[in-house]
Length: 157
Image (cartoon, rainbow, N blue to C red; front, side, top):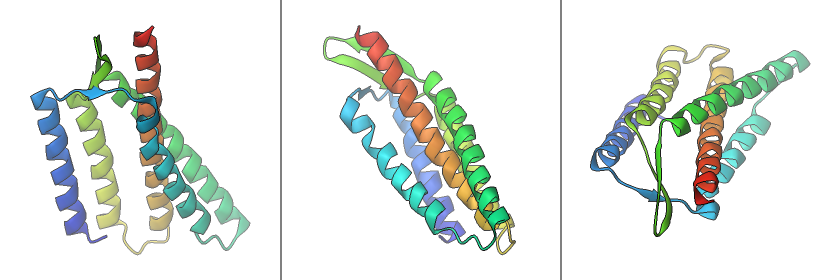
């Protein structure tokens, strides 16, 4: 993707997230719908991992390690994003709101990915780093959704 387009889309998404937090927009917990995006994103990440060209066994190990480390780091970021959210219960069920800290974590991941796209283009490890960042994003989505699910089920009792 062209870096200018990526910057424009990223800024648009971050501004929308910020405005959503500022307005106090509430999201209702739905166990089925909350897991739809993570499953789709996992399929994209898995496909990128399987399609990654790896001529040597040592490179295959490096790819697997980069994906695992990226996924674990992303999972931790996702848990932090989930922990920074606000939860509540009313007559209609459990709801949650994003927080400014959650938006800041998301913006940081986008900034790191953009830096890789701009500064490491054409270098041999750029694709490996890009795959690792994709795993960070996937792990972040799963970590956040796991925390939301845990907290919502805890509050629903």
